[in-house]
Length: 134
Image (tube, rainbow, N blue to C red):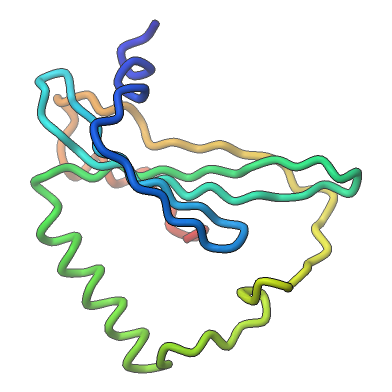
């Protein structure tokens, strides 16, 4: 088994947030050097016309050296949204009973950020993340 696959299986501590069709997984994992990092995975369920379903997953890796700045920016951005628009959800698509007709040409993509190799610099670890889906 590849080292990254073994590391992905070792969860030190986990929490799950279910939010409609989306589920967020927060997992503390260990590096080869036995240090800890965090993965945040968004999994979104899609139902096909025939009743079957599939999931799209997006994952980010967050390392200890980035926690403080990440938390600061996340708090700043969430505070901004609440201050500008309040807590009320105004989009129909976020209501629990919302149903959307999906484009049948949509394909299943499972993307992950590249490996957690410790030789990777902090800048390069985050350059491949696509935040358009978040």
